[in-house]
Length: 327
Image (cartoon, rainbow, N blue to C red; front, side, top):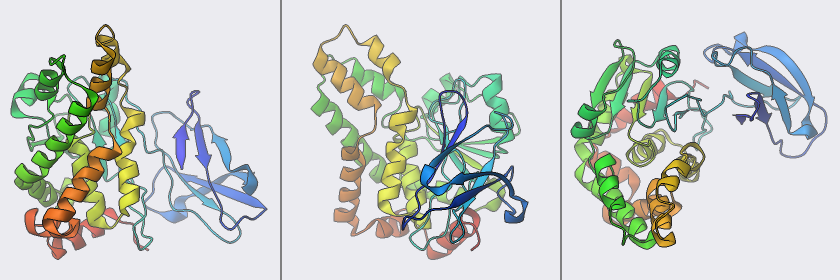
């Protein structure tokens, strides 16, 4: 894996199994489309399990491959894309399917609200070559807070109302709200989404089965609930293991800073502060409740995708063609 440290350098981390000694060679490229374009940049000891990389530029995305004498990694990149004023912006690539195919980097991104994007953010989005933005916010919110991106980027609205800004604000106005109330409300909202917005998710998959729409950015308010469910369905459809998808969902814990929201309610009773935290964060109880509901009502997630979201085998083949590296 790759992640930024507090100094802005990149930490590359690895594990080798079974344990072995020797060197690990690190290769880098500014493109993931041609393996032969990766060039050696560093050699470390396998047992170090981490090394620091100084990126050539903070605005240029780099990809890495690690090699020992007997094994090599998939393509590695920093998943979290740092923006100055956009929450939860990250790349959904890099994961491996159950058949050991890797999902391409730079094809599908996810984020929170884009209405407060700075010029720096807009330029970063342009450099990621994003062609299509799918906006899951309600029509009312989208009109009040229009997306700020380059005009050439296509914006498609697939409004999903539960857990939009207005709904969350309404819940936060209830000073009798407890943490258990908040958890139950979010779980009920997730069920409402998967039951009442099947057409929107089906249209999302129609968009994703047109190669001309890529790269695609999925966007919401905080990018954790509606975008989280959409991401779950996409990753599941291409064959990513369920436990890995849940980890991706929970990554919003690191990328959504709720401290400012908590600051706004610090004068409120502790039970209410805990409720607000539950509303604004992600929780295994939310996604697992939803998975259990789908399995019980529809028999399996595959059945739900195929029968309710119209994700045919032909569409799955196209998704995997566009989103997985060729082996």
